View (cartoon, rainbow, N blue to C red):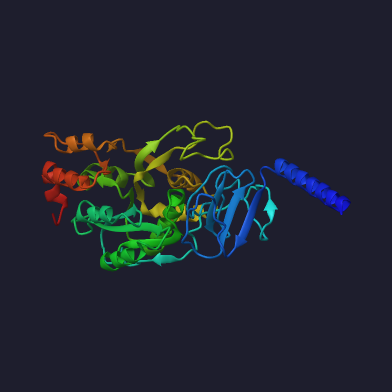
Length: 395
């Protein structure tokens, strides 16, 4: 009996040693567990999720996340941790497993935005209808719970009933929530205003490229009559009267010109929140392409279908400004840029400028503080009352 136990202990010792050696050698190996039951991490996150999930984590225990099981998602960086479901794709590192419990090394794959064929969870296809002279479709990137920001935009400069001679429409692009807490309220809001477009992807900053492509798809399908697509974030105030007076003539005089705050020779971040993986532009310290800062971009509608089609063959990149307004314009070619310097990101400075006695030349300003959108708006209505009389129908 003693001999048998000794042999068993020796076998167990050898087996343990082999396992340790394998784990050391394959430190980059990722175990994947696929089941209808979540494998929770020690962080105790995410208790209300759908079935059919995938749990990823590395052997060192430094990385784990839970994301919905699709054929077009990616694991984050080897030692990153995401505490909620996120759908992301890029050209690597990416892992994929055919069988439950299969272990494989990181492999490079190439993937593309997931919103080409995914469903609209909410669609309002008639937003652009019945507008004979539709100058602007204001396409707003927003989040489900930003009800107050959407209200502020509808109440002020983006009101679709504001302008005369230059009609505008507004749509709000959202994804789905990490829970259903805001879904019913969003559906009620959509029923009332008919301006919500919801895509079937998790609403997260890593998925803003998916949101942008969803917008391009919607414009291509449902809004042929707009002259310009005004892509903004929901925390941006725009002096729409000054845009019409100063910026619009320049865009009308040029063909295929995008107006935005243009970024040139930008440093490529390799760490931090907006880090680019090393397989993107290897050897480059600065961006090889010029591109637009995304919160304020004015795009000729004519090139949007081209950009949308180009995305179908352009590998995904999760930083939306660079992908949507750098890579895609470069792909389709023959696109020029007009640099808009007058976008202010300091609320106090912007408000002082809008309330000054002399005209403020800011075309746009950020609105991080609640109520600041309305203060900007009231100040602009007073400062530019001559332009208001020319361009405004209902104030």
